[in-house]
Structures are given as C-alpha cells and as structure tokens.
Image 1 (tube, rainbow, N blue to C red):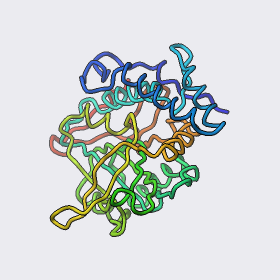
Image 2 (tube, rainbow, N blue to C red; image 1 turned 180 degrees about the horizontal axis):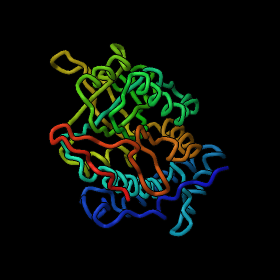
Image 3 (cartoon, helix red, strand yellow; image 1 turned 90 degrees about the vertical axis):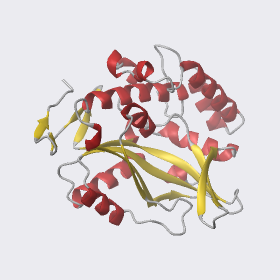
Image 4 (tube, rainbow, N blue to C red; image 1 turned 135 degrees about the horizontal axis):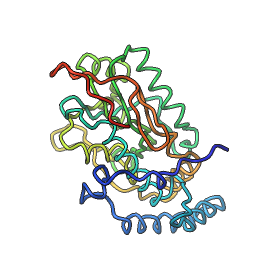
Length: 289
C-alpha cells in the first residue's frame, strides 16, 4: 500500500495559513467536537464501523490516522490545501479566476451504493473531458464533494450526488459553454443546475469551500412561486451518514483532488503551464518555488 500523504508534515507559511487569514475557519475544538459526534455515530453501527471509530478516536498529534472520515485529519488537509492553492495562485488577479461547481448524472448513487463510487475514476473522467474539449490554457484545481439529495422532505427515495468543486484560471465564456454541453442540466434531478460559476471575490473563503469540513443533505421543495428550490440541512439519517463515512475511510483524500495543468509535488501544488494575463499581456510567474 502506498504511503499516505501527511498534510500535517507540510504546514503552510504563515502568510498562506487559513488559520491566520479567516476567523470563520473551523477551530481545532470544533473539529474535535465533530470527531466525537462521528465516533458516537460509528459505534452504533456494524463491526466494521466500530473499527473505523477506533481508528479515529486514537488519532493523536504526531500519530494521525489520516482517514478521510476523520474531522481532525480533514481539517489538517484543508489547511494544507488552501495554503498550497494560495501559494500556487499568488500573483494571479481575482478577475482571472472562476469558482466552479459541476454535477454529473454519471456520479449519482442510490442508498447503499456510494461504495461503488471510485474517486480516482471520477477525477480521471473529468480531466479526460477537459482534454477532449480542448482546454489548453486553463489551470483547474479542486476536489470531490458529496451531497445526499432528497425531494419534499424524503417523500421519495434519495440519492448521493458526487460532484466537483473547482478553482479555474483563464476560463472563458466559450469554455464555460463547453462545460455546460459536456455536463447538461438534469430536468428531473433535485439539483438542476449542472454547471454553476461564480467570480472570485474572496479567494481564502472560496478556496476553502472547495474542500469542505462536512457533508450535507440537499432537500428539494416547491416554493410558493411554483419554482423548485433546494435547502441545505445536516444528514440526520444515521445509516446514510455511516455509509458515507465507510466510503471516505476507504479512499485517501488525495484521491479526491483534481489537478488539471497542475500537480502536487510533495506538499506543493505546481502549475504545469504558464498563466498568461490577457488584460495586462504578461505571464504570471510560477510562485511555488
């Protein structure tokens, strides 16, 4: 088994450390409280759930479990990831960057089926689509996320939606339309907007959203205006939550990371192509050295 990447051994510089840059970033105490809640949930499950709980409860400084299901280790990975992104995109103006969320109908799984999801395959499918669509000048970095989707307060059977949260540089309107063609809207889905884009206004907050600390339920409902809307809620179904934790524990967080025209080298994210700022007609230098 390959050695797991330990984000705790690769702390960001103070000027890139989200703990210093955002008061909204979760504290260690908050992550520890979430860990205790996860352990309580797991110990009430199966024997395999109990083994995951033991691993997470024994996670200690200098002896981290590195499980994707562990809130402490997830916080450590988020700290490293945001810091590495801030360093990689240092000098790139906000107006050159775009925040992207992409949903694919091929990444939907029914109750009890999330174990069939293979994060690495999902990442490879996305990068293959980008290459086929001639994304030649864009740098894209991100991660997979998971939502449990239900309609009208669970009157119907729900499903897991695996999706991508991404940060892109040099993404044009033409390329966005290519993405919308590759990932069409799903009229019968609980979340119909398959490709959602937002400008970068607060890079620290938006970079941290790419790799989230916890997962949610999205409830679809019919608004008073007759339009279908969604609201975010905690996943209260214990078995659904345990199912996701089992899946996360099987896959290192690095398998869920997306790198297109970029790569991770140890604790550093490096761009593999120059970023050209068309507005100023200059090349933004590589800042990861």
